[in-house]
Length: 349
Image (cartoon, rainbow, N blue to C red; front, side, top):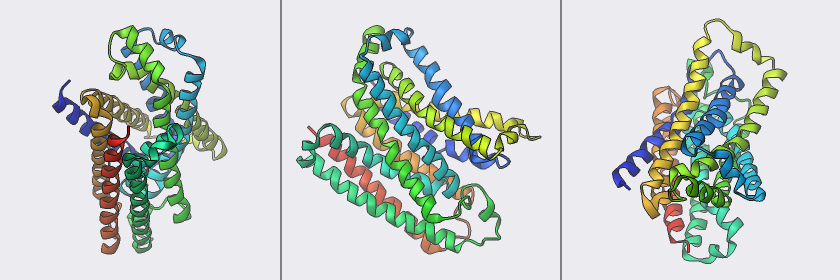
């Protein structure tokens, strides 16, 4: 194990996660369902399967060794995460990379520890670690509320006739309240991925026996990623398919001068897959603190990079200074919540 490799991998994985949504800004002739369909096929279907087949040669053999209820639970919670992924993508498209990503990842960071704790071991909520996680939830609500107020101030202050008002990520909704609730839903449902991993321990153990590595290693966990993301692929694929047919936007795949958009869609999926891969490398190289330290570094790097893309692509251009200050303070509060939840998670028995 290498601490330097673990930390650097977690940083790069966070940067990838905070960047893949920015690709939607360069496919302006496509609607959300066009680019998100490409993303879903590559990021949630193709790449995880190829990665698992590389990591574990007899992938089907691993699944055959595991009881059916475990497989179905992993798939089901992955499906729930997929619903959150639909909201996540819509939130990025509607409200922009910096604003939407910061809110959703703040909720995911806290909810990812809180929900599994309440579902699998409610009594731990009364321990010192559990109480800290509950406090972090309150801090998260405050941070999300402040960021939400910042977003409302931003959009109220933007000039409707400016170029910023028509660019992807700033004016793709009819109601700010609805778009904001979509972001909250994206954060809450996305927490279900942690439940998928919690119940999928036997899958990693079966893979570890086959490849001769620890069940906590990245390669041993690859079959979990493949199965959970397959569950997540379904709601993303079918919702995009529904929009493409209902709105007739499948025709936009055939627009002239958009052939390179297909490559952008594949690249978007590759960035996400690279982030998943590097997070696994980071966590497995940090030993017992892997899921705590790597997760903290991953979230922090992702939020910073997402805000970087938001700033340089003009999401806050023309916004009142008061909105920017509220966003900075809201982000700082969410960072504090992330620190608290990681500390509480570390203290849990």
